[in-house]
Length: 116
Length: 114
Image 1 (cartoon, rainbow over the protein chains, first blue to last red):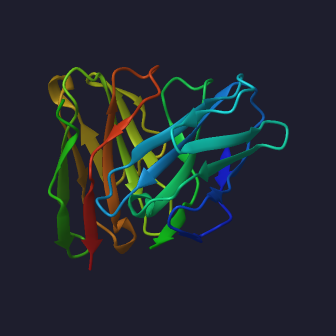
Image 2 (image 1 turned 180 degrees about the vertical axis):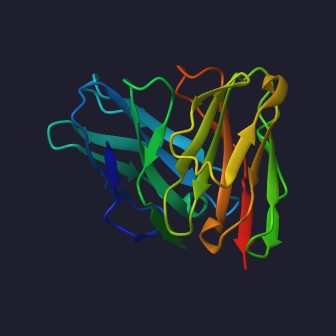
């Protein structure tokens, strides 16, 4: 079974600065997807960015980018020019391409605080 | 387009009582998921439907939890009887199909079992 670990329960960043959230995972599979989800106090999980394991190029979405290190099984999220609205829980998630459905395995989350 | 709708937003019950949660997915989405999120943890999949059929319910505690998706649209998740450890947020999500990896989540129901 796959596991996802987020070793930083909380992180803090000054507005307009850059912060990196860490995620490691354990799998024996070669093809899979990785995701970062944001969960604000409204509780709705919002997809931030996704990465296909077969792609060597790191995914980027505006101020959000990832550092995907497949051999090290590491998938960190970098948020540039942090904004107050970025404050939320962030979850790293793994999706196998081998199971019949679309099950996501989530990490335990990192709470990001943004200081004005 | 309208998002995933869930109700109620909050529910407080005593242990051994029954409770039901409702979810209406995005129109046209064939796949529906129920996740349980215990405080301080990431969400865990309970059950996944494709139309009105179950794809995966391997992590659903079937002695007390049940779910249905009649007519392949909205869904109900029930707990009977509830235990203290069932206190959690129950999130519903939907996707166009189970191959499409983009999930849309609702705002969840926060359950407190006293």
